[in-house]
Image (cartoon, rainbow, N blue to C red; front, side, top):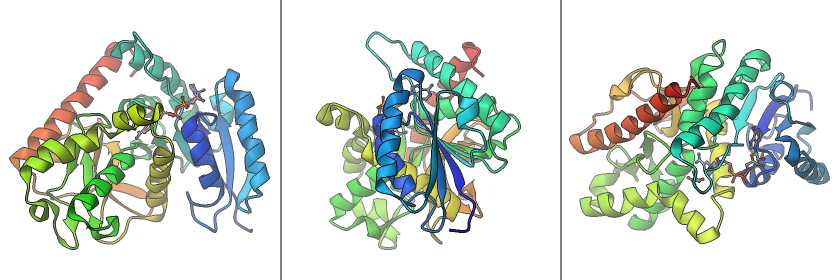
Length: 329
Ligand SMILES: NC(=O)C1=CN([C@@H]2O[C@H](COP(=O)(O)OP(=O)(O)OC[C@H]3O[C@@H](n4cnc5c(N)ncnc54)[C@H](O)[C@@H]3O)[C@@H](O)[C@H]2O)C=CC1
Ligand SMILES: O=C([O-])CC(=O)C(=O)O
């Protein structure tokens, strides 16, 4: 192996997504079969021992691409020289916690992490925020990294996209390989808008192929938007392997490029496209060439889609105002 290893920092490494994610990164699925990786794991102090256990298992896999593992509870150490950062660790909502409390607790995590990325990460750093509320946590981190191009901070809505692919494929009795250009708009929350009106199934418009507006409104959209809650209800724990899988998809396509003629979903900093206020981190249809996600331009938005996008973006603006009110950005 002659290439210099890529430094991949993963926060929340001892958590359940971390456990599903690290082995796939180390096996080459994140960056490709020719790219060695060095893992930098960030955990809170009480979870360091568990992270060490996971590192022992990673060693025991003898992955040819894994050039080393470092573990730390200090963001300035864990993000030092990071080329890719997956911000998974977050403060989950617990009983009796108000939304403001949740935003404040996460501000206490994502503000210092943004500052550390600004101070010590590599110049080509690319950040994916998975920890919820993902879009607003990404916004907090981005605002505390003024020297890093804003476009390098993204939030994960790829799991929502993958869920939408499966639901549509089942409905039409096709495979996910027949589906293209199915994107999520807005927030990674129950207000998100999975858009069938620009999606294609075997080259034909997906909404027209479904030809069932009632199913789209009463079944498809709520099923995708509330899938996370349904998994928690069924599994007694939130999505982990599927979330890790989506994180792999997101970074893989960002770095290696999206397929010609297709687009994917990612929470990226708005430039004002489609009336989404500039600066919000909102999900859009995006393509990547040359290592940059760019918002797909020129899609016609009808009244139905407009109302859905506006509702989710309004929620993002509320979250931004709340963290602004708390002095977090
Ligand atoms: N965007 C998306 O599509 C999805 C997001 N999520 C979110 O991902 C996050 C992680 O989920 P799980 O792994 O299941 O949770 P988990 O609770 O199993 O693991 C979280 C880990 O983060 C660590 N952590 C907490 N604060 C930290 C800090 N300041 N620095 C480093 N590590 C820290 C904890 O010690 C814990 O090990 C949650 O916020 C969850 O809601 C989950 C599924 C999908
Ligand atoms: O609500 C959660 O913690 C899990 C989540 O984001 C999802 O599964 O989409």
